[in-house]
Image (cartoon, rainbow, N blue to C red):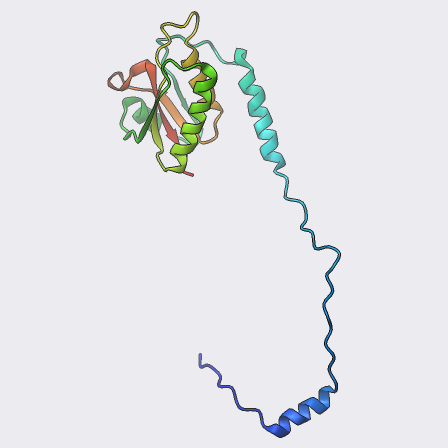
Length: 180
C-alpha cells in the first residue's frame, strides 16, 4: 500500500474551514466520580477446590496406612499407564532431589511444598524425594505417609512412584511435575 503524502493546505482553504467551524472554545475535562477501579475478580472455583483439598488432607482415615515396605505409585487420569511404568523403572532423568531424612513432619511438609514449587518454576519436571523407610517410626512411616499425602493432593503432580532399588527403593519417590 502506498503511503499518502500530506498536501500543503492552501491559505484560502484554511480560512474557509475556520469560517465554517466558527469560534472554538476549549472544554476542560473534569475528573469523573468513578475513578476507583472495580474490585478484583474473585476466583470462587479455586477457593472451593482448595477447601475440598484441605478437607481431604485432614481426613487421614481416608488414606490406607502405609508400611515401610509398601511401594507408592499414583498417576492422574491424563497420564498414560506407560508413563507410570517408565517412572517406576527410573527411565526419566532426575533433575533435582530433596532429602527429608530426620526432619519433623511439619518442617518436612513445608520444605517439600517449597521444593516442588521451585522445581516447577525452574522447569525441573522430574525430581526425587528421599523420605526414608520409616524404620525408626513407632507405627507407620511418618515422612513416607506425609509425602504420599502431599503429592496426591497437589494439582501439579502428574505422577509419582517409589524409586527403583538403585535409586532408593521404597525409601524414595520419583515425581513427574506439570510444566508451569
